[in-house]
Length: 239
Image (cartoon, rainbow, N blue to C red; front, side, top):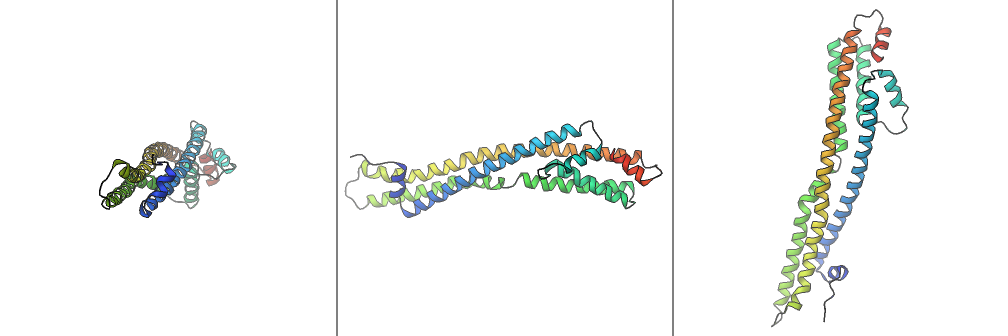
């Protein structure tokens, strides 16, 4: 007589603890795939917006026009766009307070760094969960397997003659836990590495654009520092 080794049967015939491990691993796997798709979509949008901003910013230093363009966008301003707006807002605020040029640039650079840090945290959101899943899910599955094998061999102690047909179903039930652990861990590890690389690439480009933006403000500030009118100087800086 052949034993029924379908996944449903292996789950229902497993011990309560092994069933609990299987359910936990299944939930973890679902959460991992949800995060993978959500983070992948968010990073694709961030890269698309970055490419668009970079194309408009490169070689066009009419900051007022660029600022108005961002203000008219329908989606929420994030990423390099938010970094740009925050930096320019701080720059103009310090300038209108008659701060020294060096103080203006120092304050602007601090705001840019703070915004860069915030954006990095947002880009890396939930990636630590994927890392944890990749690290521990295999061990959780292995725990279920060890417990299932131990239970199967304990049951063999109650019979006088053990056969392969008697031990195979119990071992199969136990190994399902390890299989589920690998099913959760492998995609999580791969996705974590890929998404982390994309985050690092985006942050590198953010840093480069933030430095270029700071240099543009620095040149415009010192080039117009001798202007007679504050309004004329601010207009010159924006243009």
